[in-house]
Image 1 (tube, each protein chain N blue to C red):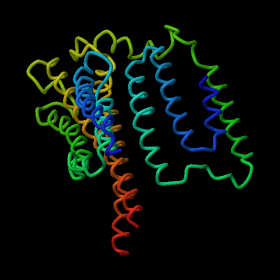
Image 2: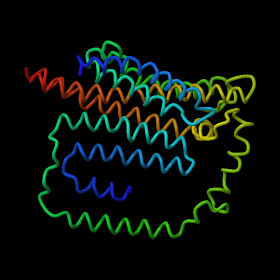
Image 3: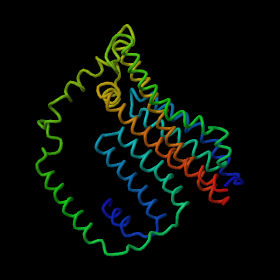
Image 4: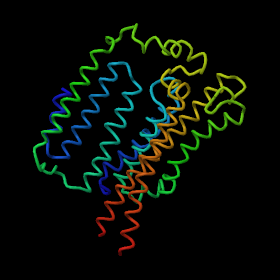
Length: 169
Length: 143
């Protein structure tokens, strides 16, 4: 079903339909993540992917035309690059340990300590929260800075544009 | 959409619950799914909903642009401030054990403030992007 949606997004020329299909795709992705027991990620996917980005894309769509322009030439080279890279990635997954293999390196390195000691060390029952905010606090600080930089970039780009228009009047 | 009675009433009914849910996601994130990122996005969604139904000027009165833009940096400052507080109390940067007499309590306190910082920055950035896009539309209409 998600593959059919992806093909529909690529083929569809009406950008409004593309935005709505992308929102549906995000919701399906969220249900997949719930099925994988990653509730926190599913929640983020549903609120950010299906909620806010749909609204922002629709807002951007209002500023532009609703139809995708016809490509100037047939995109054969990008298609070939995408197929080769995709095949290489699929080939790479063959080397990964089997799904939910208890002996996989990811389950034997730091995870037992996080799962076993998190409640004792941080007093927070949700391990995702304690890993995110405490054990991996630097990573989350970096992520917050990335979000901050995105906001600052938007302000810098669009603010200057508006002032220039004022000067022209 | 400003004169649509049904939408206005439903929006007024729903927005308090959306905000309450955002606070629940924020402060219950220690026990269930959720946390600063999700809560920040839900808060921003509530304000964007308000802006769509009642118009951008009403939303700007509710959340002026300078408030939203300072939220962008205040969140990062809160996050970094937790780290500096750990330094001042004699620990490492972003070391929460020293924030309270009991190390576990210190961890809880550190995680709480870090999540607050994340929520403030995320909702500020989302609202900033929305305001900027919406303002461009208005500029184009005037031109």
